[in-house]
Figure 1 (tube, rainbow, N blue to C red):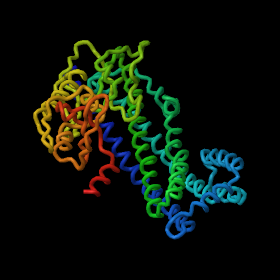
Figure 2 (cartoon, helix red, strand yellow; figure 1 turned 180 degrees about the vertical axis):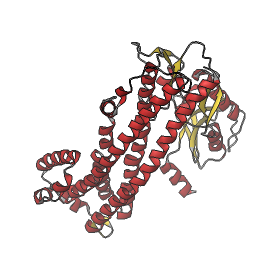
Figure 3 (tube, helix red, strand yellow; figure 1 turned 60 degrees about the vertical axis):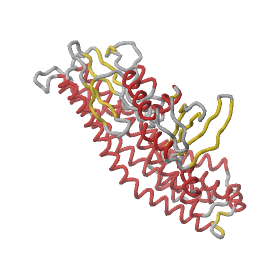
Figure 4 (cartoon, rainbow, N blue to C red; figure 1 turned 120 degrees about the vertical axis):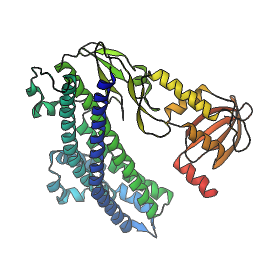
Amino acid sequence: MSSYWEQRFLDLWLFNESKDKRYLRQMDKRFVPIRDSISDSIDIFLNRWANQDKLDLDELRLLISKSDQQSWKFTLQEFRQKAIDGGYDDELNREYFRSRISRLDALKSELYIQLAEAANQEDKSLSSHLKDQFKETLYQTIYKLTDNGAFTLPINWGKYNADKLKIILSTPWEGSNFSSRVWGNLADKLPDKLTQILSQGAVNGWGIDRIKKEMMTGFDSVAANRMYTLVQTESAHIAEMASMAGYRETNVEQWQWMATLETHTCKYCASMDSEVFEVDGNQDPPPGGSHPNCRCRSLPYIDGWVHLKRWSRNPETGKGERIDFVSYDDWLKGQHYQANNAIIGMKTVDGIEIKQTSQHLAERTIGRSVSPSEIKDALQNPIYIRPDKIDSNGVSRKYVGLNVSVVVNPETGTVITTHKTGSRTVRKYTKEG
């Protein structure tokens, strides 16, 4: 593929990515009021039932035991169906519903009500975003493959009307469609998660400030972060469906898989890099968006097109860039080489000279998105050094850094492995320091 054509499709990918980022910024704004509302509900509950700044464990057990479990499960199933059908407002005000649940279940149901409203809104917003994504990608793919509209093809645009797009969006893939995933991330799992944290806080004697902090952290990790992943994954999947439709409409017979050149590309996508597939063949290619946050994409494959450049994410800066064409395997070897050059020959803060690295380190560096500069920083500026540990594999010493932790054999100077340093570990050792 010439640089001219590559740039066209790279522009399309970047355009779709910018639309996703815009949607996520808007979603963040929509999450602010629901987060505030949940925070207020938790405040009211904790202040009502807390005893001397702590939730009383005996009282909490009593509240839970008062719940009529069978009636609650039946009512909740009915209620959730009402919510999905849009009838939860009337149901909320019925006296029999309120009277058959315990106080803790009442909090759970209140959270469910609020999150059901958010799920309904996000379901509609995401549906609109994905429809636009499909149409824009389809039209742009056809436009670019017809040399910016220099010639026309007899395309039946009626195949891509609103009803057809609705069917495409509602078709399950990987077990469910995006709508059920929205509900699963927001309205179904989160109330249980938050009330589990509440019970855990009572058992451990946490103060109400910590309980609330943990619950709101749970909201951010379960709701916001998972919704980010959902939007990016569904968008990539829809974009690939639209690309395939564009290939068929322009009589492109083959396409080529392009694994993203970045450190956390999955092994399956990487193993298929540069392979060519038939548009209507029986092969089993990796579908775009087949796993969370997949950034890999297809390109039309046409005889005479020669690859000159491809997109890559710089592991040090985290920024995307166009580099000379190279296969994923060769790019990966280059990352290993750069990592070795960066750390071999250096000395740790306690004088150990790094002489070699293990293959395990190379795999972990790529798989866990660890950069050479982070490894160097951990070895030279650790916040904690774990005493030597001896096992069947020999001697190991761990250097805990602010960003990553690195394990070294102090006798051989071999860097064995690395991993991201957990936030709790950082707080523990920076506090002790």
